[in-house]
Amino acid sequence: DQQVKQNSPSLSVQEGRISILNCDYTNSMFDYFLWYKKYPAEGPTFLISISSIKDKNEDGRFTVFLNKSAKHLSLHIVPSQPGDSAVYFCAASASGGTSYGKLTFGQGTILTVHP
Amino acid sequence: GAGVSQSPSNKVTEKGKDVELRCDPISGHTALYWYRQSLGQGLEFLIYFQGNSAPDKSGLPSDRFSAERTGGSVSTLTIQRTQQEDSAVYLCASSFTGTSKLEREYFGAGTRLSVL
Image (cartoon, rainbow over all chains, first blue to last red):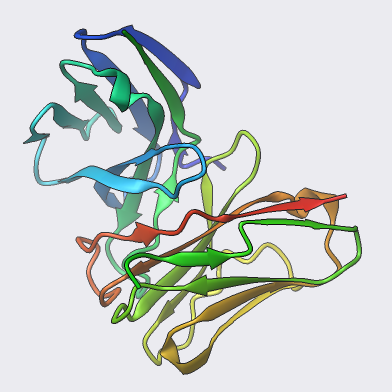
């Protein structure tokens, strides 16, 4: 079962506009959410995260919004730049247990920002 | 090293052969994770090592998969009697202690395994 879902396999945006990437989850035990960015032939790199005690976290051009009641989070990139073109993965983790860093990932969304 | 290093970067093997994939974590990181990404899928957790604790093997898909971490540093993921469905990119990540969900995981570039 896919506990973290990114239903849009791809997104195309014009440079300067806003990119909105969406992610849904089903496991109510998830309490920490992350976004990773991946360029071809490289490993994923951490972008931004949010704890379930918050509903928004902002870092420069990147903002993550969390709607716990809807089990939905989104990543906003504004303004979008061509260098933002990459695969974006949503990930989640749950408290408890001993594998603190065990992440559950979505399938990824390919973002293309056109000049 | 500066980052997580994985080798080989690409591996092509025949069905039924055994393969070994290697991961060198960031120096000083005590937690190490293996994930894999099959075509069209997200990253799938395989196994987690933290210090001297028993590894969390809950994500290993079958008993053909095993991993070890010698000396608390380098890790080897072994797949025995490879099958075509094992074809995927195998990613290794490490973090400083693995005892906080707030720690960032740093990923290697992965090993692309193709089973013919």
